[in-house]
Amino acid sequence: MSVTEQPQPAQGRPGTGPDEARQQLRDRISADSLTTRRDYLRIVATVSGGLAIGGVGVAAGILHRHGDSEDLPATRKVADELPPGQAVAFRYPGDEDRALAVRLADGTLVGYSAVCTHLACAVLWRQDRGSDGELYCPCHEGVFDARTGEVTAGPPPRPLPRIFLTEQGDGSVWAVATARSGEPAKDALCRQLGDSRPEMTQRLGCPGTARATENRRT
Ligand code: FES
Image (cartoon, rainbow, N blue to C red; front, side, top):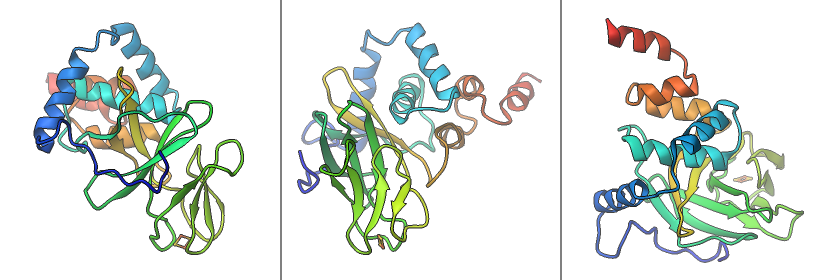
């Protein structure tokens, strides 16, 4: 699927609203037998190490399995599948917020706001630029690294804000959370979780977690 195709953001089965779609996803995730405690701990450890948007996306998906934070945006289906070397445009977290999901050639799944950080033009994905392709803003020739969202050319002053994605067992791709421009994944999750998931924030090592846990005990 190319970025020029603009499917309507899927909200679940046809005829269902956002709340219902969210519940459907929750139910499906709860039934996912692949989610073991070992997986959970491994993914949390990955996030603690500060890496990969894919791992963070899965971690954020797990947050939804165990309880939602009111500050986390609703999950939204991005595509039924996204093969390597393909991208899809969608809207997230709001219906007016342009976003892009890209499956890099090595299988890595990345998501970004498609609003240029220069003057807010729409950012496109160009597959034929290097091994990862690139994210390109035609207004003033702004270019962003497809793997990191960092600015590689032109006037944009900041990286593209990230959108955390997760892939389900059936191959479908879902947007689950966002980060601000340049914000580390762990910081973004800690900020959006707030006090709603003390166990998770403690595992992530979010600032103030120990104090909050202590206060809760007293
Ligand atoms: Fe994107 Fe200027 S609006 S480079």
